[in-house]
Amino acid sequence: MKTNPFKLWALVLAIAFPPLALAEPIFKNNDTICLIGDSITHSGPYHSYVFLYYATRFPEMRLKFINCGISGDSASGMMGRLNKDVFSNNATVATLSAGMNDVNRGLYSLIKVPEDAENSKQKAIDGFKQNVVKISDALEAKGVRQIFITPTIYDETFNSPVESLVGVNGALGECSDFVLELGKKRNAPVVDFWHPMNEINQKQQQADPAFTLIGKDRIHPGPMGHLVMAYLFLDQTDAPQDVWRLSIDAKSKTVLEQKNAEATNLEGTPSGLAFSNKEMALPFPVLEDAKQACELVPFMDRLNQQVLQVRSLAPGNYTLKINGTEVGAYSQSALEQGVNLATNSSTPQSVLAQQIAALCKEHQALGSTIRMLRRVEMKHLKGVDLRDKEVVKATLNAFIAEKQAQKNDPGANSGYYITTARTYLKESDNEDPMRQRIQAIEDEIYRINQPQSYSYTLEKSTDPQPVPNS
Image 1 (cartoon, rainbow, N blue to C red):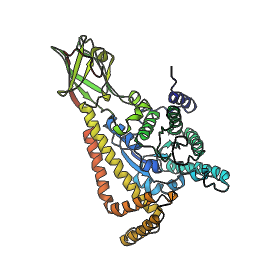
Image 2: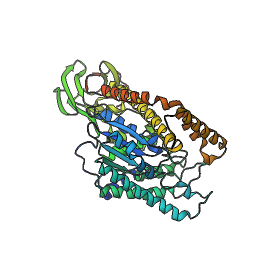
Image 3: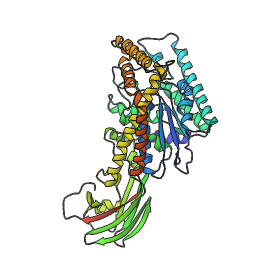
Image 4: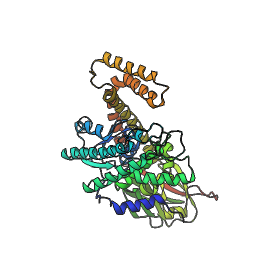
């Protein structure tokens, strides 16, 4: 029997840092959640996936997720922008994710070896710890509920032309252990990304050295990695497993069990069964660009169970229709055991969930663009009167010319800086319309996600061949 290292680590983590007993979801109705972080928060969609989960699972709970990430930032910079990013938004909850820039990755280079690197490495880690405590103190003083998040991993072991900077990941591990302990001391929720992601990455690379949960730059996860992160966030904050569960006895036409659903109008038909089902939640949709994550973590089993169980059916195969549309075919034995409809992308519920997913994706993209505006102002327009458009334009054009002159220097990161400056020049006057669109997206999500009733029919099939989904 194969051993699952992720499950082993989860057990170790549960013993060392037992999760807080959560009698209810970690978020509350009308919460404003500010997500403080660096580029992994700024540009990455893990928090958008968390938003998507809550929007589909808790339609009665209106939440506002605000991206407060800044690419390239550290805990020190995050401390300096709490007033503007968090308190001015009247945050009720703040998540804190830092570390990737705090450890000062350049100190680990063997190509350009810094002077006194060893002492500087420890000073960087100590600075991270001090600033995380300061941020936590400031949030506590304002009555903002905190969720600590450990850093993600730096993948120094997969095959890549980028210098591996051996030691960076260990430094992030030390930062993670500190965050875990701090959260425990402060009786606050902690989400551990580093340890589980490190275990998954090492396991996968034993079979495929080219595998990475992160990306070519060894720093930034792609959609797959971000869905793993969303899973870890939801799992470790005790998010519920079930979309809904329904168990019906076809012979007696009675409901045996129902959870987050309400079945009515059960009727026998000449070839099967019909009923209505009011459903209080939607499934988490299949995300094509991130679905490989479900091979790495048990997302569907742990967080996405929409189970229909029908007992006492006559042997054979059955066609399932929802609202009159055929959505799948199942054997009597599969229905007797229970089928997870969340895996079926053809159901009308999944179609609605995909609509919400598209809106969440747009929401995340707009939020990321707005954060890019803040980044350019913080990094490249400091001291400039932002109301003077000509000065802003001249300053950024001079910055672009400087970076273009450095385009042959890989360390200058010219392409990224030029792109962000040009984005600012193009989009800075569109911030108000972007914010209006974000509000409209949220309104649309909370219109689509409301509970509704669906009509179900199960009809015995005459097809003798094996049936899909059975």
